[in-house]
Image (cartoon, rainbow, N blue to C red; front, side):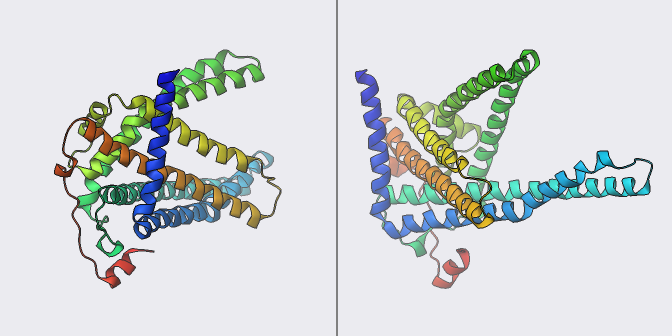
Length: 318
């Protein structure tokens, strides 16, 4: 019990240090907070006004097919229209997924760089912020992010493999729902444990020259001894995000469209802010891990800066 309380105290210290980090360089940290939030809001609006109408239209058109006579020309024409709409939906979904991934990775790059510079008490102004849109800054995190996505997809594919026998042999719907829910919670909790290495490897690939499998291996090496508090930290952020979703689920779906849209915007912004705060915590944890190894953090790869003119900076930001 005493050891658990010590771990809990260490988690609270990390959260406290993360909060203090925003006060060290308010202008920089506020800017890197608003920029990804703005991009996530744009993606959400694209989803609402482009993807969801396509889904609704596709469902409505598909529901008419069983009511039509297959021998008529109208049936064939309607069937071809459904296929065309489905093709358009697939293209839009791929675009949405690609844009979301780019914005997610850009958010990680921005918040980790800003957190590292602020933690090291560098006197960095917004106009001195690194140019993060070049291949040089994207290569390492992009490769590491690719491996993390593969591991995540493989992990949840395993979930469906385990879930399939339950769906096949369960006869009672309520019993099936209970077992599926328990299995999902179990997999989600264990994913929080695996995500310790995933998150830390992203930070490593941004602040060092190591990326990909090497970054994942290095993260697993330097995080030894800190996994209990990072596991609790991931559970905390996961519960916060889950709580936000549950609050929104209580909203009456029969409300007006502006109300539902506003609530969705608040939810997307809140979850994005929680994730960014989690990345700040992992950046602080990275320096703690390096400190525990007895290595000089300042000897790591320095972040290169490019002095930007005011006009260039304004053009780079939305």
